[in-house]
Image (cartoon, rainbow, N blue to C red; front, side, top):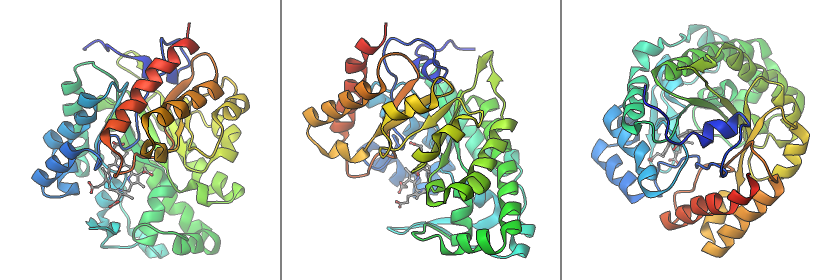
Length: 354
Ligand code: CP3
């Protein structure tokens, strides 16, 4: 087993002392990097890139070559699971993700298989192994999945949605069908994340991008309950170390107290919640990850640095903070600005740690 050279990301997630605040960026491997666009062109398209472990490994490492990041994240997509359930994922230029088959009726849900991860998602597991070996202990590797609710929105709507018309109809008019779908997805996600962990993922994040579209009671019943079920079924220790789990519900700031009782080690925050308030509310139950507005990266360097400083000051001294953007980095950001951001976190945070 290769020793981890930089473990401040794992330490901060477990609220253990660190020398400075660790930082990574959601979607850190992606279209804002010219070298990513070059590799994707070589692969042919986005899904072919995800399905090629060597190339997926190459793009995972690209942002680490440029920036002093404290974690790598597996290059893949949350929609690999519905694809493995036979829905036929494809990407239409400028339109985002689409599915050939849509899930709308009780029969559609009953017919969905729980995927055999080792068979149908073997390309993801192979990518985890490849990346872990290429990292050679440089920084920890994060595995991830979508939350059942977020995956279900894409499966029922057939792609991205603004108003969630069809899935909300299912949720309110046929809640038992909705629950059956979410239960299947929770089983699939648990198996998927555990295979990622066994293949070498040292932390996992559940992306609940659309949980924030729900009312409080519906969030608890249809999103958080299933994430909790996943957390309960996760392998929590591997290679002699705890495997921390991060829950990120975008626009979930008002539910942090309840999320902190889910069993997760850390909660991701978007930029609409003040991180100092969040820290006071969750106390020492969980670490926090976030939460700079990704659009700050369109500003000049001094403005990026002052926004980083403000978030560090709001969180205050001590461990338990993993710096990140409040959502994925935008494709039109200048790569230089991402470097200013990462360096500012390390430089300006040292005085908050003993
Ligand atoms: O963070 C990382 O660097 C890891 C890679 C990663 C991707 N997608 C790569 C990707 C991760 C963690 C995701 C998660 C994901 N995918 C989420 C949850 C997180 C979030 O952003 O809210 C969601 C909702 C998806 C579904 C999805 N995949 C969308 C909406 C899109 C964008 C479609 C578009 O054309 O804008 C994708 C495609 C995608 N996933 C890209 C990347 C780098 C861009 C594809 C490309 O290269 O053209």
